[in-house]
Length: 153
Ligand SMILES: [Cu+2]
Image 1 (cartoon, rainbow, N blue to C red):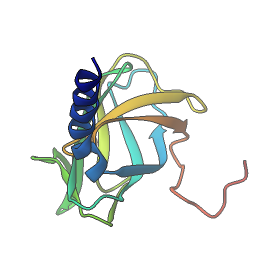
Image 2: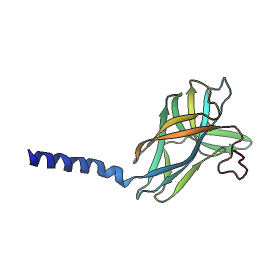
Image 3: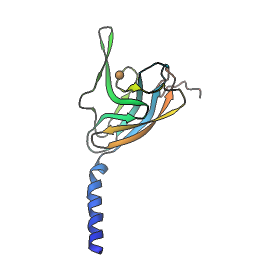
Image 4: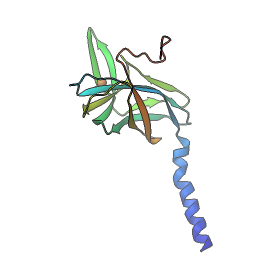
């Protein structure tokens, strides 16, 4: 019996090795509160890649929306355009990417209910290397600033 147990343990170690090479940290995750009839919502955070290899944020899933996509926002003359980031948002090893209003963001499509300030919503982010990472996002008022210096809570 003993050799079989050893082989099983070894197999488990080998299977978990790729996950150890990838490591992401999600800081200051927040969602913007939405109007009652809104069908889409925005999500923001700073994502750090503490691993040794490039990773890519592909999207995510949540119970409160039909889908979670990664969008970029750019100015085209005076028109703001959002579009899905094809192939995922790359995060260099040792680097970070900020998802913030006016820039890259998570787009919750097909909202099933409004997002109310103060509540917490779990979104499972999907990374190419790190896999599925559940993150608790706090819903903040529309004028919330990432890391803002005048927070009076
Ligand atoms: Cu968007």
